Length: 75
Image (cartoon, rainbow, N blue to C red; front, side, top):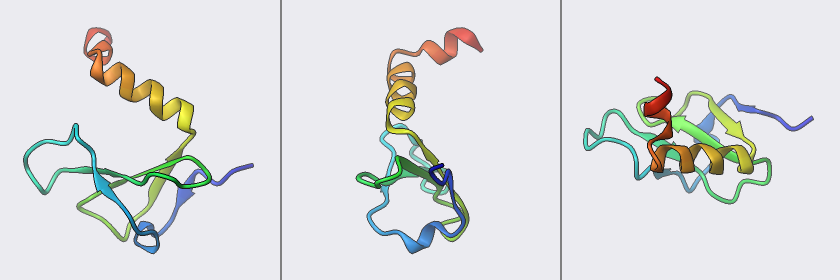
């Protein structure tokens, strides 16, 4: 089974701020491209904390839903 949590996300380099994060630099979602296990996601306020790793297909579906505002319709 593939690991779904990285306990110390700071051990990885190349994080980028999500384009869907707000303008407030203290509340950002960061993602890491090219990880072999999927797409790691972390909270920028806690770079040494854990990151969740999502399967690439699941992350792509989530991003598509956000872009199409489907999540707002189900809230």
